[in-house]
Image (cartoon, rainbow, N blue to C red; front, side, top):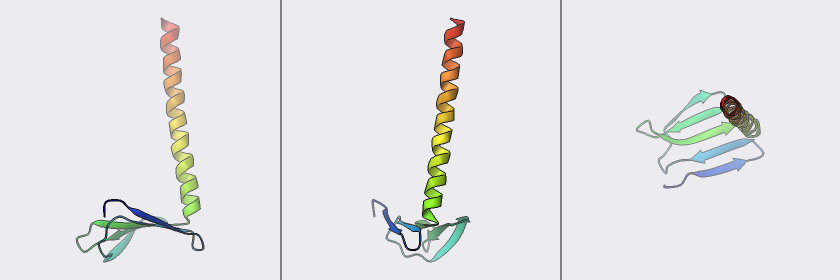
Length: 85
């Protein structure tokens, strides 16, 4: 499988991403509400995310805030450089 397949199950609030065609042999929780699905070789073949809307909200907020902080720091540094010229 070249492209992952992602499905959302609104009734259960679950996102499931299939990464390969391999059969899931075992799974392990890698963080709260996120489970890695492994094939017979122990390689990742799928991911399941519970409480998907909360996960996405938090992920988007954290990454947006980090990017904003980076942009603000870069702007501040540029202003410092300009003020010393």
